[in-house]
Each structure stands twice: as structure tokens, then as C-alpha cells.
Image (cartoon, one colour):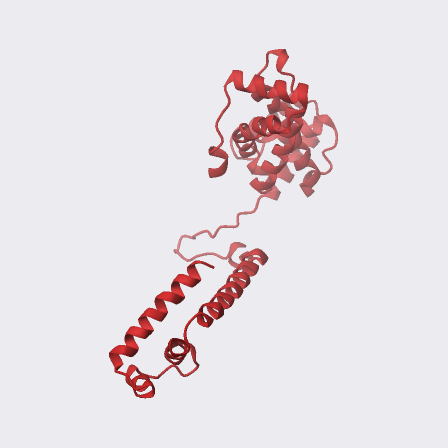
Length: 265
């Protein structure tokens, strides 16, 4: 969403110029500018379809396809702004995607049934079950059978399941799907990223140690990198026949060099 907001909106003159370049010269960069400047429209329309159990990212993706189709067919000489022209294509693409992928409405194949599916929620008076008079009214307005209205209402109501935990009157948390559906393991992309970072750090550390002189490398390995890193400054001072303060200075300088080398990797 932050990336979408970064794209500026186009003035009427800019939109006409880009659309003309696309139409006359097949300018792909102009098409890209028309698309990215209208991504907010796709998000706004996709949010209106959030009640059908499909991820918002999928809805936006399909809406983007509709937007691209609209840009391809847009004629700037007709005096209509792209936003008005694109709304139809975006909504149509999202509608088709929902009908194709929502398993409980694959039977909604006729135009009237699809109209029922996408309008039933807004035509209901409240959240209660439809009254027979309401069923008949909606059936007449949408040109479908009353039985189809009841069936679609049942499908819509039965499809939505709350994943969040609810709290009962005693204050105890009730069991809900979110309690057992959550997967705390890393996603493949995150796991791969961690592996790559560890590999880079290991390689970078090896190269950084190799850049040190033998005494500095020995001090760092003995103090920090060996399995039994328990040698004191005095132990190393006795080994190299220098003062403990001198060992501390060498260690500090080597650590700074290691840090600089790792930041440069």
C-alpha cells in the first residue's frame, strides 16, 4: 500500500498525453504510467469484495489485470477519463475471479445468478435471515426464483467462519480455528533468506579473519571463536610475552577491523 501511494495521480493533460502515446506509438512506458497512477483505484474497488472469503492480495491482483485490459482499450479521444472507463474492467475481472474460485458459488453461472450473488448482501435489511416478503422482493428485482435467493443466502451465511477467538460470559477463551490453524514455522522465502545471510556472514567472517595478522587472529579466535573461549587477557599476555593491556589493545583493533570488513560485505 505504501508503494502504491508513492505513485502520483495524473492530471487530465498528462493522462491524455500518455494515452495518445500508447495508442499511436505503442509506448510501453506510457502504458506503465497509466497503470501505476490508477493502482489506488484497484485497491479501493477490491476492498468492496472483502466479504467473499478471498485474500485481498488476490483480489487486487485480478483487479490489476482488469486495469491493464482497460488501459489497452482506452481511447483518449472520446473525452472520458480513464478512471471511469477502467472501473468496469476492474470490477468485471474481480467478479469473474470470485465466481471461478469460490467453491460455494460455482453454480452461479447465469447472469441473473451472478447478479444475485454480488447484490444479495447489500439488498438484505440487516443481518437476520431473510423474511419471506424480502425473499420475494429480491427475487423480483433480480429476476431469479425465490428458491435461488434462499439458497444463495444459505451459501453466503454458511461460508463465513470466524477465525478469531471469542470470549464467553465466564471470561474463558473459547476454542476457535485460529488456535490450531496458525503456522509458526518460517515461510520458505524467510528460511532461504536466513540461510543466505548465515552463509554470507560465515564467508565474510572467514575473509575478515584472513585479513588479520597471525597474532591478532590468534587472540580473537582464543577469546571469542573457539569452543572453549575462556582464555583471559593475562593468559594471552603470557603466551606472547607482552602486557595484558597490550593484548586488550590488539583485540580491540582487530575487532574494529573485523566489523569494518563485515559491513563492507
